[in-house]
Length: 368
Image (tube, rainbow, N blue to C red):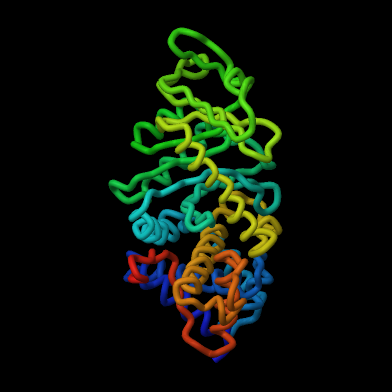
């Protein structure tokens, strides 16, 4: 049996195992195509349908496979709610034993489109749990789209989970902050140094906080109201990290400025997903698709592929495979790169291929 066939069959079985409606024949057919897309994306290290098709064995010509995948990404009956959220819910249910740190940002995808994505942070990686795709170059999305994505993300968050939401200066809108408060989520978002604030009747710009501090300093004011809308009370924070030319300004519903800064450091983890999907993984920005809805469906396969590879990287760490596939004493590879190498090792050794789209956290003394 070929490596590609073994890989495809393992992915297909994992998709079926965790899909909630396995009795639906039409959806089962769509899952079969989804498994082929995931397998082809990983095997080809590409998000272009012709390249994917060359790595999927199903007894048909490559041109026929391309047409099949094209029909799949055009099919309006296929959406994230049916074909991605069941796996995202399983992922978050496993990670919710700890505080869920969510990060939101945008990135260019396909031809002339940009995706606004929300991720959960795990061991230095950003794992996708939802997205919206729109035409345009990379830039700010409207606050209405921010709210739409947050509401979609809320649908997959386990009941009672502790959540911290992180965003850059695009996500400091008062309606978004109010929504996060209503959801019971903690939040830390960057804001402009020109943002106006009011404390005990005095109005000031936030850059006043940074006028007299030096690198390595954090200053926080509690019970502040911000912008002309006087939204609050919130905590405003000025943080100047060592090695940076100037401070940054944050707005948060956390009381501790130090805690808010520690969480905000995790925001940059979202870049790990974009690098995995582009320069070091499955170049999504080089996909030839230009329709937002089609790219959104392709993202289902790309994101599930990414979750699987990170799972393999986690398995590599937990089972101490790194000293077999990398170095004995030191490992400087990310979970994503470890996962790719472990997959190659399993294929080369003709061993069973483990496939999951969620992470099992290690318990005490290695118990999982």
